[in-house]
Each structure stands twice: as C-alpha cells, then as structure tokens.
Length: 249
Image 1 (tube, rainbow, N blue to C red):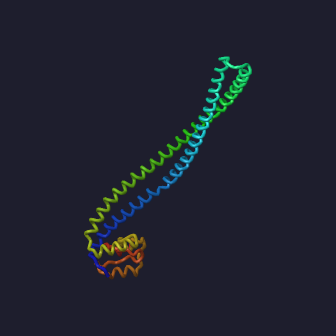
Image 2: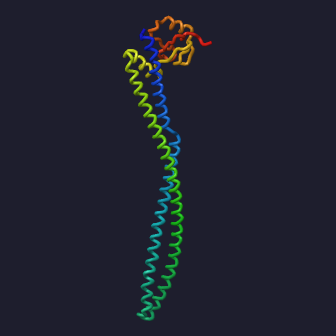
Image 3: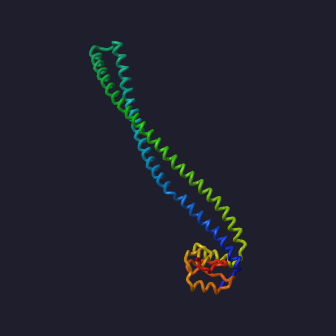
C-alpha cells in the first residue's frame, strides 16, 4: 500500500480545494460561452438582417423604377418643348402645323399619364423608405442588444480567466511541495474520478457523500496513519482526521 506522512496527506485537501475551484471556474466559463440568450438574440439578429435586406432591395427596385419614370417624363417634356417652339414659330404648312398640334395634344396627354405614374412610384418609394428605416432601427436595436450580451460575456470570461490564473499559480506552487509519487497518484485519481482527495469525517466519505460500511471502516482502522487509503465508492484518497472514525451523534 502506498504511504505518505499524515500531514502530507492532510495538505492534499488544500490542493483539492484549489482544483475544485479551477473546475468551478471552468464550468462558469463554459456557461458564459453557451449563454442561451446569446443564441436567442443572435437568431433575432439574423431574422431582422433578412428583413433589412428585403426592405432595402425593395427600396432600390422602386428607386430604379422612379428613375425610369422620371426619364420618360423628361423625354416627353423635351419633345413638347421642341414642338411648342415649332408651333410658336409658325413655320411650315397648314397641314404640318395641324399635325404638330395633334402631336402636342397627344404628348400633353402622355405627359399627364406619365406624371401620374411618376407620382404613384414616388409615393411607393417614400413608403418603402419609411419601411426600410423602421427595419433599420429594429436591426440596430437588436444588434446593440447582442453586442451588449457579448461584451458582458467577454467581461465575465476575462474576470474568470484572471481568477483562474491566480488560482492556478497557487495550485502550481502548492503542488510543487509534494513528493512526486503522492502527487502523481493524486492527479491520476483526480483525472479519472474528478476528485483526487477528500476528508473522511465521522465515518463518512466527503468524496462520495456516503457513510462507509462497518467493514470498510474496520479495514481503514487497521491501516497505519501513513498508509494511503482510498474511498471504496469514489476511489479518491481519504484523508483521515483525529475523529475520522467516530460516528456522528
């Protein structure tokens, strides 16, 4: 059976306390990284981003349609101005002037129809622009919410990393004071079981949380103080105090 001085075994509890703190910090970091709220808000960002793309696309399509409508109106206006000048000059035969008057009337009607179309498209552009601005506002809000959550997560992780660094330094310093065989045994059990050492107190293993059987307690009672005993349930090193075998009242 492996051996270590009782006081050396007792110091394993300090090492275990530091390792437990490191495990706790790792769980806290994992919880911070997997915060479900980040996923929920991230999904909302993707949703509003999609809305913004659709709203922006619709606005751009309407703006192009408005440009075409304006160009058509301008083309008719240019032809009307040219024909008006010819009419006002009185140049040409009576037949030509009559035909020109008909063309002016036709162009005037065409201009009126095109301006109606232009006005309709302008109204749709304004509506689309308002809708796009509304979606942009919601998008900015959700993105700001996500950014706030990410900043809070990063701050929490930074605090955890700082604390973990301090605890790890203490752990490394303490671990260096143990004899290599005892430390190797402890760390092997820690890696396999999750707990390397625990107190045996009033007949109860704090590694498993279970009360030991009379037979197990009898075996431990027969072991020398410097002999290393293991918890029959959790497999961790049991550190015995002066009243380890006394049952709680």
